[in-house]
Length: 147
Image (cartoon, rainbow, N blue to C red; front, side):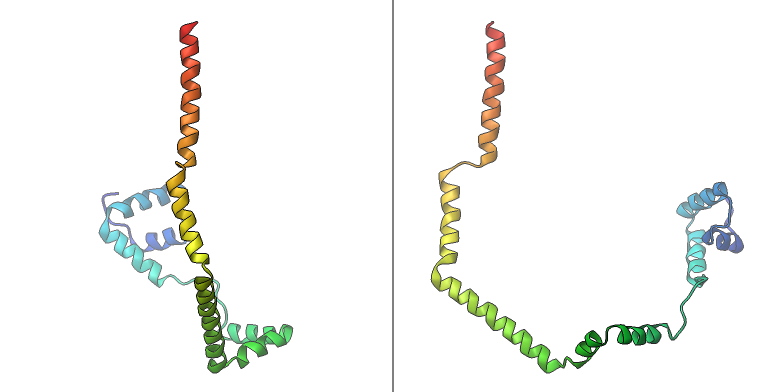
């Protein structure tokens, strides 16, 4: 397609009303032609979805939810910003208190010293496995060569 794609054809392309071969041709053309791609984007912007919900859909849904689950809807509505702040502060102080308690009990020091011991004492397990497999395969080749 050396010419630009017409507006009506692009509308049919968006609605997938064209034959498969023509759809593919237009798709290839849109990847090469900036003018047609810009027109295609305009068609998409103007395209309306055939099915839409009514303006009162959200309100009706919330009313039905309030009937089906009245306790949950009331609890969410009653939470004030003061209650939220209190809970946040309580969680913060609880976390800070546990951190201080663990720090003074030596749990963190024990974890760091354990990490240092692991690094200092043994080579990584992966190296041990590789060495064991390498030695096993090397011995097998030597035995075959000696026989």
